[in-house]
Length: 259
Ligand SMILES: [Zn+2]
Image (tube, rainbow, N blue to C red; front, side):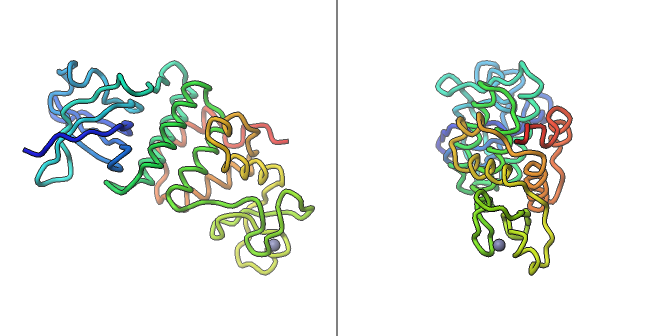
């Protein structure tokens, strides 16, 4: 039998399987995204104790199988890790559901994801403590995109490097450029882009750099920034995330005050 391994992990999704088992997908600190089967999970409160639900932050114990993708989950314990408690607030559940689904979409099985685990854990813990906000949503989006290799730049024109904050020029977000271009460079570019205000460019620049706890308190980008991020994510993920509609109904894109 394979040796038992362990890693901190966050449950991304879980579903019942057969009469008593559960199949669970987690983002782990040490082993990337992992899916496993928990035998008898519905009956064994001693080994699992409700720890295999979405958002659960657990120390996961498992054994690999010689064949097949699913590991055997042997135990899940929560005592040593900060709990993520979102179930008191619809806004928290909506944004948390979106965070785990976006992380799930960008992470691939057993690829290195230590930073993604940190981003997700920090974001969910901030969400649990401080509540849902457009700034936290934008911070999570920018950081998880950066981890996945889809980092964005808003601080200067991607072509001529004119700073977006200090300039009197108008700027446009262009998906193919991964950032903004100024109106002069736009005239020579085949892409038209979405207008992005200087305030939103400044907000996204700052939110992308600050730690998540700080960024969540920042002034968010306005609707132009939220729509730019949503379009960019849509260009990377070729299906609509199920949680987006729910989140947008609770927190409309750009509901943050734009200065
Ligand atoms: Zn330019």
